[in-house]
Image (cartoon, rainbow, N blue to C red; front, side, top):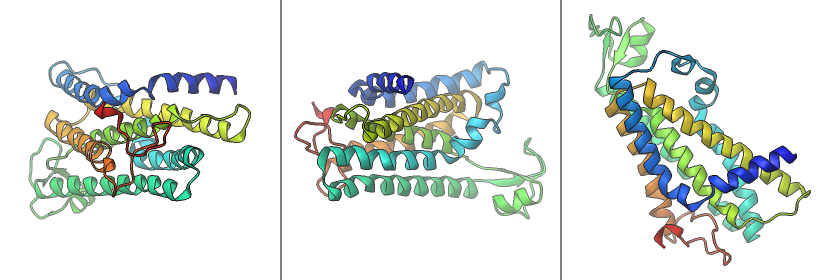
Length: 262
């Protein structure tokens, strides 16, 4: 438990800082651009992480929203209730997960539609031998073909959105005070470690996506969708009275206080 406490203390001192929330979007954009330029002009040698079937990609990134949702749900519920003591406010704040699910679903549907309407089926990845009889990706792959369209990077979108959402929600830790040895303290500490570790995985896999996969334009669009999803909620809509609201970040527990406007 002592090692867990130390790691949680380290995460509180890094991810919970306002500077992290302020500069992480810019850091992600910079990472995406520099990584993409590296891929274009000085590609890195193949590695375990360049294999789409690496363990982090298969069991974490492929289900990134499920991991984020499942860990944020108890974290938001426990931390917000310990501060406000009001179930109605907790339910209101938990609706951010429904909003996030809608953003995830809508964006992936848009990406899939764009790839479909801009794509064609070919015999091989070298784009030779167009097979016009196959009019959709599923049919093309089912017949052993290769579908080529404008494939907006879903990884760039989702990893950006998930990482930014987690650090926004972890800002509540500035106000949460629990007694050591109490079960609530242990549970929140465990969730802090899990969410912090998940954030580092998302940022690391975002870097891997930048240097190994997709074209620059596909990653630019993916990252921009992730940034718009975060900005449209935490920097705009959640400041309104008819929204799920921001995490409690002041001693007065005013859900609408926004540290970014200072």
